Amino acid sequence: MNTKLLLSAVILANLGNAHASTQGYAEALYSDYSTASNNQVTFTLYELAQGSMSSLKGAPISLLIGAPSYIVSGSDHAISIENVKLEAVAGRKSPVDAEDLNFEVDEFDRTGYPYKQGEYRLFTVGVQIGKELYSHKAVEFCWEKQSYCQVIDLNVDFLDSVVNGIREQKAKGWSVLHTSTPADTMTEAGRCGIASNPSIKTREENWPAYDRVYKRGGGRVMGRIYVKSVQLGMRCDTSCNGQVYGLVNASSGTAYGITSTVCDMAEDKVNSGRSVRHLGVTGCAHKTNGHAQFDISIEGLGSLATDFDIDIQGAHHQNGGVLRESCAFF
Image 1: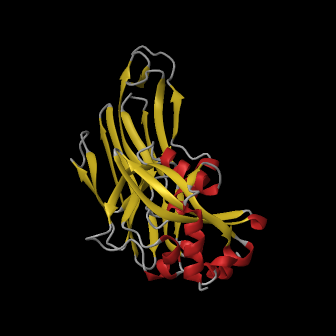
Image 2 (image 1 turned 45 degrees about the vertical axis):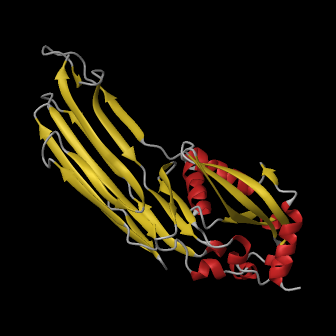
Image 3 (image 1 turned 180 degrees about the vertical axis):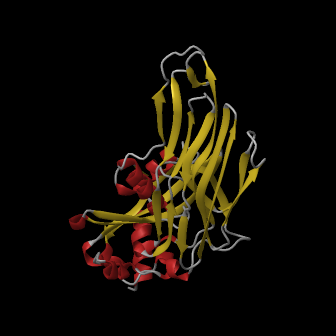
């Protein structure tokens, strides 16, 4: 019996026993994606088949899970996923290429994970976005001796890479850091402090740098994003006038195969007597099989009312924002 017929027989034999699965690497992966998106999307996994990867020798991914008919994607930031959407593949370029579909299970040998030592689980993945329900197939591969697993799901864009990237940043304690220094003692004119909090005279926000690596089945790297750090700060000087300080660093990225990546940054500082405004943004967008876009434009350049807008195509990463404050005597 050839691989295709054997696989079909295994799946058919297990269809009647398909059940919602709640434990394992794959289940935790989908759960973490949902949590990071604030439940914009939820998943339910139904296990169809499981066994030794050796029984799948020569089986391409397309035979296991098929080509995608839709793609779920979102903008994965350091520790969150925003703007989750589902788009039909029909009428748009495929989110995967021939290498994704033709990758054979035994090719894992080249990545340091011998297929004869691995186990697989095949799932139907139920997807819910709002009131809309969808389903597709995905497959999990695990090597117990090496404590390593990987899920290949061509319908959820870079699922494994996104979730593990977020897990890494959470483990590092990534967060926007807010710092300040106390206001000086009282003078004849009063005590100078920041209008939003008179007890302090400086305010600073720091976005740490982070990176993300996007991989396909077998560990094939399709892109890298390096989102750089942003520091937005202001202080009240000895005359109780506002002064801005800080630094915005340029982000960068690389893309391979059918992916594209673009990056941009913008900064504008305004001191106007006691009032200040510091704008600083850096980031990148990436897109599978299309042209990514990440163009930052500053509106009202040089004024206290300055804001920014970003023209985006694809999923994007971003650090920074706008800091507005003023100093006063209290």
